[in-house]
Length: 186
View 1: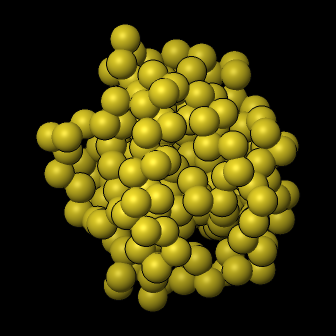
View 2: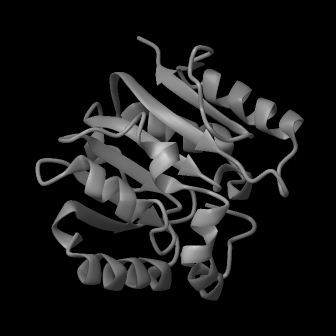
């Protein structure tokens, strides 16, 4: 799915507790994730955001964590097991061009594309697959790293997302730069 894939071994750096000093998963996700939700997270890596989302959806919700690399998913599984969250997280291995989420059509409350869109060569297809999973009114949170992605590149990506039936929520107040909340427009 990506022309440049973050090496699996960098996954350990991405889940470092020090990262929370710069980027708080709780602060980012708390306004959007609720008990009982179904959340899908493509490009989950070893679960920096995944574990926080799993805590927030509670016992009645679930997080579908998708990644291209089995080693990332194995790292996520180890971390989820240690945190007592394995039962809330469903791991899925994506393939080039396919997130493997077609069975979730219309069932997802929120999708999280966190620091991943810039790695996807066919962003229109990526956004199309995620839009298809969302319930009417469901949301897609897009966050891109400021150091890697320019604002103009994010805007180009958001334009592709709008072509797939998603609309930028201009009223959303997000606590991080290079981010947007998109809603499924029906």
